[in-house]
Length: 207
Image 1 (cartoon, rainbow, N blue to C red):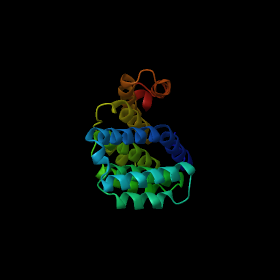
Image 2: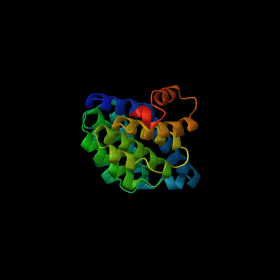
Image 3: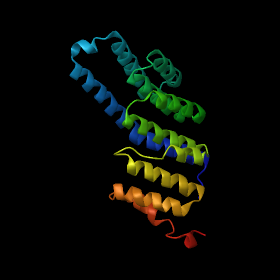
């Protein structure tokens, strides 16, 4: 059954709410750890200090649900291009664009984030979000292109989303195969098992 545009956007919002803040927090902690390892003198670098302050302000605006987060995210990312904070700013802006039902802007911001990301974890996170937005736009093939080879630790998430996209497109046998891979990575996921159980086991049953 093909979901409506409103249902698709709501799914993206729910996923973003569940996974987005955790990933961003992890990256921020990683940056802080790197800075601590390099010593306080590195932290005094004006460029990084300025980027950190701008990102903190942006994060506060996003948490408060202010209206100018999308525009402010672009300004922060552009001003601090080349830092990890720029990638995070694009991600926050994309999330706010999704909240505004502006999926085209969300895609543009996520593309910018991906081109700036230099860590496998961050690239994978961007690809997952981008695939979800493209799927909501009805761009099934484009979404699947983003869900090719998953880096270590993301195999289950990539496979589950690939199954969702394939099932929505009507490729039920392929969707079942993707869900089976996802279950191998996360056998305790009851919702994932329900998705798998709802699909036919053979092409004859799918016909």
